[in-house]
Every structure is written in C-alpha cells, then in structure tokens.
Length: 179
Image (cartoon, helix red, strand yellow):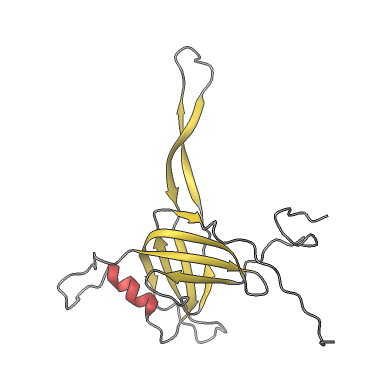
C-alpha cells in the first residue's frame, strides 16, 4: 500500500526530491538562469506567555508576531546580470540617477517551483515583497581550489504561501525499446 495517500499512483512510495526546481521572479516569464541552490522557506511565530489572575500556577501560551526567514539564492558566476541588477535597485552608491535606492521597484514577488524527476511541476510557493539584503558578486578566489565561482542573493521577504492550484501531475510511463 502506498504511504502517501494523496498520490494518484498507488505504487508511489517516494517523497519528492530537492534537486529539481525553478525560480521565477516578477516581470519575467522565463525562470531565473542557473540557480543551483535555494535556501529553506522558514517562518517562526513568537510565543506570548501570560497567566490568568485566578490561576497563578500555570502559564498560558499564545502566538505572537510571525517572522519569515531570509531566503538565499545561489548560482554560478556568468555574464548574466539579473542578480546584480536587482541588488543594485536596493543600493547603488554613486548612481547617476542621484538616488541610491530604486523605491519604485526594488521589491519583487518570486515563485519557487519544485519538479519531480520527469520535470513536472509538483509543488509551488509564492514568496511576497522580496528585496535583496545581501549580494555576493564573487566568492573568495583561490588558485588552488577546484570549485565554481558562486554568486549569492539573500532575499528578505514578507511571507509566502503554497500555490494550491498546482495539483499532482499524472506521472509518465514508457517502455523502452518501443514494441
């Protein structure tokens, strides 16, 4: 019996993997090029403790403010300037526009899509009002290393939610060689 009752395939026992995904940001129809790593979506609600005067021996707990953790995007350094363009909207010292912040459009909504092994979208999350709080244009360079040069964006955000319009796809099947 399948362990995940939501799956339409009664033989599926596997949860989705974390190595196939796409990231889109507002105003773009194509995914952001070359992203190799996306940080976790995490939120934390503070705990507000209080007690009632008639029951001094126990403390009650209720939810307080909710905070959304920053999300990190990583990709290899290329000639593509999308990371840098977005980061420069938040801070571009010495800009010829006589302003260091592009207040009109420094925030973007992004969408993170998780794919199954067949490349089908299985889960999507919308992340709201993101802006770049940290941009690493180049990593530490080391002539003795055997590694890629990675750019990093750290995105502050004001919340995220799952896109429930994305349903479970019908998983493909094939026979090789064809009969």
